[in-house]
Structure formats: C-alpha cells, structure tokens
Image 1 (cartoon, rainbow, N blue to C red):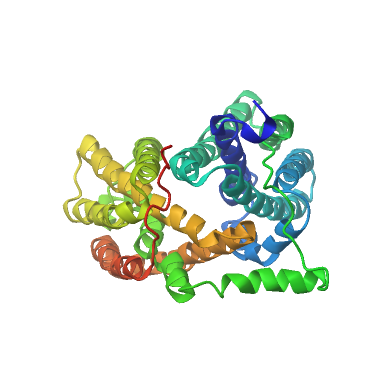
Image 2 (image 1 turned 30 degrees about the vertical axis):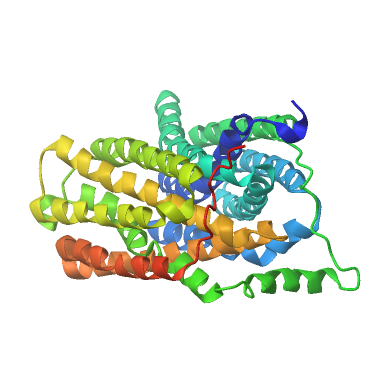
Amino acid sequence: MPPHQRHPWAWVPSLYFAQGVPYVVVMTVSVIMYKRLGISNTDIALYTSWLYLPWVIKPLWSPVVEMFRTKRFWIVTLQFVIGAALASVALTIPLPSFFQVTLAVFWLMAFASATHDIAADGFYMIALPQHQQAAFVGVRSTFYRVAMITGQGILVVLAGKIEMESGGRIAFAWSVTFGVLAALFLLFFVYHRFFLPAPVADVPARRDTSTTPLQEFVRIFLLFFRKKNILATVAFLLLYRFAEAQLVKLVSPFLLDPRGDGGLGLMTSEVGIVYGTVGIIALTMGGLLGGWLVSRHGLKFWLWPMVLIIHLPDLTFVYLSQMQPENFLLINAAVATEQFGYGFGFTAYMMYMILVSEGEHKTAHYAICTGFMALGMMIPGMFSGWLQETIGYQQFFLWVVLSTIPGFIVAALVKIPEGFGKRVTP
C-alpha cells in the first residue's frame, strides 16, 4: 500500500497512545513520583500545577507548526525529543538536586508534548477523509485513554514492584520506570518514522512572501476569530462540558471519602475497579459508538441525542450522594452509566472542533479549539473543590445537574452543516 494510503488502524491507535503518555506522565505520574521521593504536598501542588500551562497556551505557537515543515516531521521529531526527555528524567532522579532538574525536564517534555498534540491532531485531519475522521474519533479517544490507564496504573504498579524487590530503593525504582518509558517512546519514534502515512496534503501552509513569519503567524491566529458565528463557537467550546468539568474533579474524592463525610467510603483498590476499569471501559464504549453513529448519519443528526446523553446521566451521582448505596455492583452500574454518557456525548464536541477547524489552517485552528477546551475544563475544575467543601456532596451534585443548562444553550446556538461527518457511499 502506498505511504499516503496506509490504513488508519496502522497508525491512529499508536499515534494517540503516544500522545497520551507524556501528558499523563507530566500531570499525574510526576505527582506520585515526587510524593514517593519525599517532596512536600505544598511544593508538589505548586510546581506541578504550572506544568499544565503549555496545553492551555499551545494555540499561541500552533501557526509555527503550520508554517514550517510537515506535520509528519513534527510528530516524528518530537517523539524523539520526548523519548530523550524521559531518559533524562531517568538519569537525573538519583541526583541530590533531582527536584529542580527533573522539573526543568518535565517543562521541556510538556512543551514538546503540547506541540506534538498540535501536529498529531492536524495530521489526523489531513490524512483521513471526513467520514473516517468521524469513524475513528472513538478509536483515537480509546487509545488516548489506554495511555491514561498505562500511566496511572501500570507504570505506578511497576515502580512499586521494583521498589519492593530492590529493598526500598525508591529513586532506583523510578529511574528504571522512566527508563522503560524512554525505550517505549524511542520505539514509537522508529515505528512512526516508517509507518505513518505521507499524505500529499501534508505540506507547510502557503505563506504570502510579502509578509514576515511573525505577520503570517498573527494572520493565521486572527483568521480563527473571523470565522462565521465565532461567538457561539467559543461559547460552545467553553461551556458544553461546564457540568462535566466540575464533576470529573470530585468523582474520586466522593468514592473515597467516608460515608460520614457524604462519600461512599470505598477502598483505593475498589475505586480502581469502579472508576479506573469499569468506568474507562464504559467511557471507551460510549466514544466508539458515538464515532460510528456520526459516520453513519452525520453530526447534525446526532447532536441533540449526544447533548442529552452526556448530561442526563449526571443524575446518577445525585442518586449515589443521596442514597449512599453499599451494593458494589450498583455503584459500578451508576458510574458506568455516567461515563458511557460522557464518552458518547463528547464525540459531538470533538467532531465540532474538526468542523470549526476546516479550511487552509486546520492544524493551527484545531489547536486553538483545544486551547479553549482546556480552559473550559480548567476554570470550572478550579472552583469545584471549594464549592463541594462548602455545600457538601448532596448539594454539589444537584448543582452539577443545574450546571448542564449552559451546555444545552450553547448546543442550540451552533450551526452544523447537513451531513457533516457522514460517510459518503459511492
């Protein structure tokens, strides 16, 4: 098969698994590692929170990826950089100044990962026709989430086992774990160097030679905000998941907190089953089904069912907080219902970002959409913990249900072309 016609199954799963790994390492695994290495909670929270910044501001340099070289070049090069950064973490953990040095490397990794996201998402849109973009939305989400499970589960378990078998050598255990990660990423680099397709459309954006690169950068950025119905678009990107952004921050604490504090009092291992296994499977199934249905009938046909199905299952947490059931299967079923709805309804959000990004500068414009997506999750999440502690779990989950109202409003404001995302039959 010619390089530009490689089947999506040959590269979409591996590309989005590679996209998810550095994110979960920087945002989650680093926290656990620093905690095991004796860093205070204050320092961990302060310094690792700043590591999220590159994903929020990545639209600021997305035009650079558009203007110079191919998306394929950026993907392969940055996977090598991320692999080298992971190896650097492995080598510097044993140093006396490991905290400062590894933080600096994590910053490099965060910027490389955020830039890799820009290139990978842009590549996805130019390498696949529209109907395949819709069909594989669930696949890319699935393997991104598999990366989350790998980071939060398998890597931490690996570090723990090495620590026990080495007689409590914590730094050694984490060095080995990051060494394994570095080797994995170098394998991604080699694999994608040879197996990523080379679509003919993957070329640098055409640039007016009468302008400087900086002027072209600004022009590409401003073109996004000149799109038709842009205010409704930004509102949709910020508010579609307003309720879910608050809910997702408090699910694990709610499952873990004692019943006397309004939680369900589950053990850590039980939370791993409920939220990290059953929940992830349901989330994945919802995403796969959503992508398949959009490819069959188009986004416009499925928009309102997806709006309803992402929001109404939030009522399951109202039930759990009010009744505090002890039946483990019932708790699993409730969480699975909410997570399936989230996975299914999130398909509409991802497809809408693809729609908004259509045009000459789709890579940069998709990155701008993801920046708004990150902001839409970050701001509600920042105040959700304070709000829950102020009013308690029962009232908090009622508030979450009320918070779905903006999601319905912004869905009514956006315009979806007939048949967008639908597979075209010959």
